[in-house]
Length: 307
Image: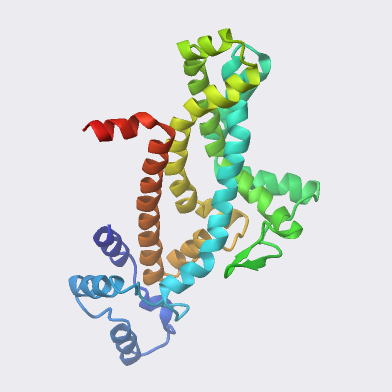
């Protein structure tokens, strides 16, 4: 991935055009090229990047003049806060709606839920975001349209959901980012419910006289959560990586907004560092999902022991 990312980014455009005055002479242009090591062959630039990356140095931003990793880490809390808020909304809203639609598939409410989930898949994120701004910020004036609002420092990270002003700024972008995942959770939960509700152990538990709430909360939810956790774990990486559109629409100061600005300015070190961090996040998230899967499904652990 480091090779693909580095080569892909370095064959596009010429950052020197963004770094110097258009009226600069050739001597100044050559000096800037040498200063950033752009005069070396691409394979030597990659080797230099790789050796530094193994020491935790992902290069220095051409535009901001500071380490790219430090620049991204400054923006990471905002993106993680937005991504986890969207994931929580998708779970809290999506699972109950999906379970209800699975338990009562013929009800009008269930049909409405499933039709709405199709809209969540179909409508473009940027358009939904703009419509939300127009309705809730411009027409009704209920919520702020852009920015992150008031933040508080916790463990060296700025968090906005702990303040009322920050929470009001977070609500719209988090809901906008969660719509696609919420639709996915609804359909997964409904499909899982329709499959589990007819299993023999559910019929046996109902015959024993267990209450409907216990059947759902203990026997049904635990079994439908296995595919939901697996998919959502992988989708979390997507929320972090592809929050670019939402952050741009709502001017949310996260990594997505930073990467868009860096692409416009051809700030190669920041683009490469961002993509490498995203790749690392996907690897870690996959590992966590595998661990959670074995916790939720004891059969996975038993198979490992038997093999």
